[in-house]
Image (tube, rainbow, N blue to C red; front, side):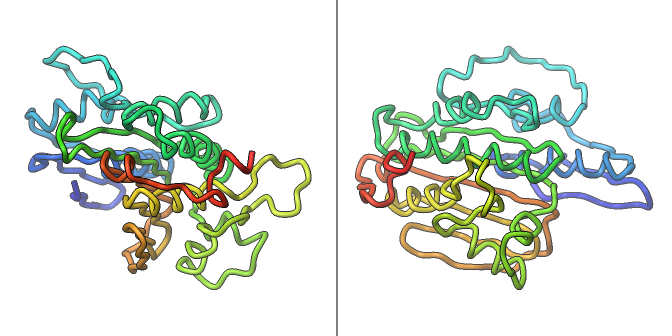
Length: 270
């Protein structure tokens, strides 16, 4: 899902050729539309009715962008298979949203899921606190009931990014350096604030859980993105994102075999 054309003060988003939409793409698109509208641009949307279009409708993409569409299908209950898109702002209950997103992850009693429940809630809370513009979150399971069962959880905003959030507390060179810092234990923009309950563990623990479960964790902000795949971490330049996109991708077999180190588990730090 990668189509947008600017013409003066208008932006045309063409979804006609979309055949498959991942949570990260939908979250980013909704966040971008909110940013464009806040900048007084006119946003036009072009989309043919198709299976992908109905899926995006069912996941609340158009609804969250403020676009009214006729739904020619019966909405299914989430049932732990997916979590429809939710607007993340000052009104959202981040702990409940975290639980709803993690409902797609199996098995229910895994240490991976228990650890993520705490650190994901902190990261969602940070989104609004720093961005001051609505972000969006959703989740989806894929190939349910097969040996390839996997899960994707995504959050995106266009609220300035990690560099801007950390700059007041740390000396930071650029967006890449900001991403490096953000995934370290104890790094928080609330450093030195005795009244803050933010411990700087959210992104660090998500990263460690993805490593232990042989999954992936992608953090994109500004001109760089950081990608964790199992034990490996790589950095890639990007054309620029005016905020933050966070994507957690896990698979059932990795979760079943994960061993969360005692010094890493968020349950030992709260």
